[in-house]
Image 1 (tube, rainbow, N blue to C red):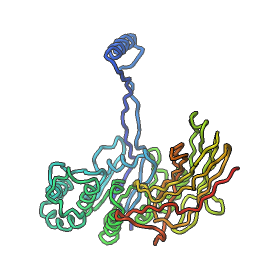
Image 2 (image 1 turned 60 degrees about the vertical axis):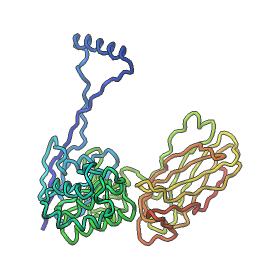
Image 3 (image 1 turned 135 degrees about the horizontal axis):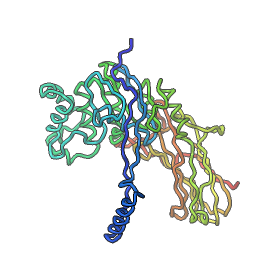
Image 4 (image 1 turned 90 degrees about the vertical axis):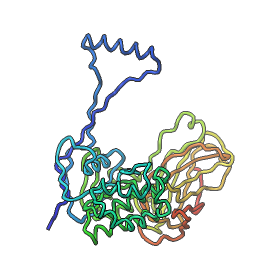
Length: 409
C-alpha cells in the first residue's frame, strides 16, 4: 500500500528580475537619471523594468516512505529551487507541499555551521537547527565524529576546515540524526571518491534498513543509477518525466542530448590557424554512444581543418569526472602536418571506473595551445574496473592509454 511522505501539488516559484543600466561615471549616472525623470513625467518609461521568472511551474508528484528518488536535469532546470522549497528555506508562490516527518537537508557546503565555532559545537548547533534535543545529539555524537573522520580537528573552528571536511561533518550530522526525509544536493561532489562511496552506502542503508526517504540530486548518472530506484527529470522548471530510474535516465540523455558532441563555430583567429570541424563519440562499429559498460571499447573521432602547415602538431583528449577529477589524458605523437582536412581517432584500450565523464578535445603545436573544446559526456556504469590506477586521493589518472591515428581526408 502506498504511503506518501512527500506530496507536491501544482508547485510554482516565481522571482522578479530587475533590469538596470549601470554606469561607470557620476556624469553618466546623473545624465541618465535626469532623462529618466523626464520620460516618466511624459509617461514614456516605467519606473523600473521588471521581468517575471518562474523557476518552478506546475510541479506535482508524490514520494512514498522509504523511497530513494533521484532528481536530475540540466543546470537551471529548477532542481535546487525545488529542494529549497521542500527544505522550507523558501516559500512557494503557488501550490502546496505536504511533508510527513522531519527533514534534514545538505544543500551547500557549511549550511547551518557557524565559522567561529568548533566542529564539536557545530554538531550541537546543527542538530538543534534540525530539531533534535541535546540528549539525542549526545547519543549520536560518537557515530557522527567517527563517520566524518574529523576527530583530530573536533575542537578547531570550522572556518579552518577544508571544503571536504565541511561536507564530511555536515553529511554526518544530517544522516545520523534520524530524519524521516534526507535531502542531498550535488554538494557531495566536493568530497573525495572514497567518502562519496561511504555517503552513498549510508543513504542506501538509511532507506532499506531504516525506512528513511532520500532525495538525491546529482549530475553523476552512475551514482543516481546505483542508489535510486525512481527518478524525476526536471526541465525549465517542470517535471518532464517521472518513473523508474533507468527509464528516466535514458529520457534525460535523449532530451538533453548530453553526450552528443557539440562543435562551436571557429573564431576568425582560428580560421587562419587550425580548428575542429566535427566530433563523434561512438562504438567501434561506428554507432553513436551515449553510455557504456565498464570494459566496453569505444572511440572518439575528431575532424580538423588546418589553414596552414604545422610542426609538432598534437591532438589530445581528456576525460574529467563530474566532480572535476582528471581521470584520463591521451595524445597522439607530435607530427609535422600539411594544411587541409584531417581526422584523428582515439580508441579506448583500458576500462575506466564507473562514472559520468566529460570528454575534452584540444589542439596544440610546439606546446602552444590552439583550441580546446568540451566534446560531450559519456556515462560509464558497472563494477570491477580493470586497468584503473588509484592514487591516494581515491582518483586515478591514466596517461596515453588509447590507440591513436591521424590521416588526411
